[in-house]
Image (cartoon, rainbow, N blue to C red; front, side, top):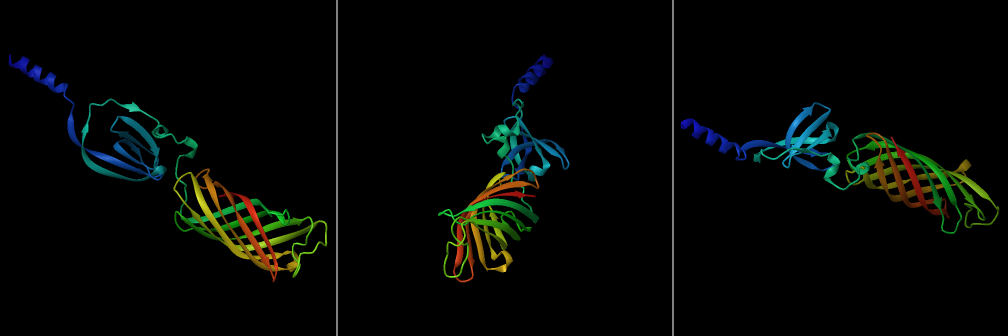
Length: 257
């Protein structure tokens, strides 16, 4: 009789969800997400597998993880497991997921672009390169040099005190030397930025020289941990000696590596 009672009690206990104290890990990702659950497996410097409270299992590369902490809590162990890919957590497309990958250190750009004047004069194509250092997740400072090729259908690009129709097709080369300050916002794979450049520009053969300035917002798309594409639209200004000046809007695409 006692044996039957013990069997009955044991069977009853088997149908009661097991409630116990346990540690919950909090996995902080570099993209700002926090995954709460139990770490099932961790391969040093490679990957980590986390089971959340609803039984879902996610796997991340350790390069995506900022830190891991633990909290004491009560968990219900009766829930079934189900496996989901980490991309099912949100509606964000997979190619937009991840952080911006920016780290302290050397950073360089190669640019190509066009600049246009509202009256169709002083249009240009240009290439530039910038080299500098990323000081933190937001701020970059560097220096650069460019080569700008201008053409003008009806006016000299520069002549003291006037713009005279001397040549039907006037072409000129301008070399800007500049400092670059850039601000990258949001720790996402696709992120906005603002780029500000200022310095000195010289017309071919040293015929004229003066200030150079450009500013514009843009977007950056990370290709991998070291490479990215940047698109910037903005305003560019150059002044020469007393009266010569050129103002343009520009579009610039940059390869970062």
